[in-house]
Image (cartoon, rainbow, N blue to C red; front, side, top):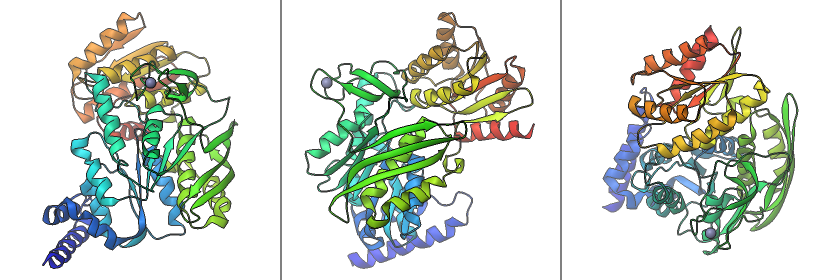
Length: 475
Ligand SMILES: [Zn+2]
């Protein structure tokens, strides 16, 4: 009976998938929802065993997971039969992807905002991934007041995605204290933990303020910051950055490209031993944060590929042909108008906002500029605090503040705090309405008296940024 129920549930799920695939929503979560409703979450593993032959890789983190996942998918897709899903954060969407087809490897982005919605413990115990990849973990917009405890819960949720693994592969960012913490925890359970990081002097950044030690909560001491909280750090309790197994050892930025070198030794699943990586890529000029994504994807491919003799060729041929199209919608880009250069895109946490500002400041090159800041929401004081730090350090000539999310009152309150610091600023109140918000951003850009304009901050949806970019490009 159990088998019959499984077959029927799988069939219903599959049929629903086929029907919904032609619908506008793409049926992203519904077939998976039906399968899990009929069979129970505890039987997801049965489906996975049936559908995915070798094993699955899960990618999580705060920033860069979509780009990293896309790169890993493209790397494997050339030689392997894969099941994939990008931009996922529910077990239903994940199950839907698994229902879609049989394959050798599953590659799934899995964003987790909290334990309740992400169910990381169920995903871990049911998917039983052969690997979990962490990009970085920083405060993002689901964080609310009472911060430290809640950020801890957020880290905990990310941690649970690999908790309980034995003999698996964890690929984690050594430069980020919270992902290093997870790596250290997984090492206790006899997993292969691979740390990746930077080993270059010419990439530096200001820190975004105090970063708490994941073990004892005291502020970490940094000797170098590569990008925001990512750097070389240590704590008086003994916790410190782990020396990376694989590193970016050279970054050369030209007017058209970034040339990078990656070297190291990582555990390879096929060899059950270490494999050397020594590659050089010519990448598009797409910002430092993407070098981390390239490094994470390189490490993942080196760890899971069975094409060990072709490793260098496989990696270099792929990354040398990479273009801007790899970046997800809403990404920061520079739009040239008749009399202005406008850098615009989503920046809904301190980390992302800082990456946008750093990128644009290279173009601004010391000239006067306008900063159009779309604010965080009610109860997102922590995000605002991180944003404020970046905005102040960027030293804009003028700041236009407008609401980025639901609450206009919260936006006004944040504006008051910016004004108190003596910065030259104005506030534009716009009610919560997609069209009105897009119109207001375009209006502010047009009215600005400066040649250089940065537009970033929180947006209720990624589409806001794409809509503004598209309308600007038409003008
Ligand atoms: Zn500590």
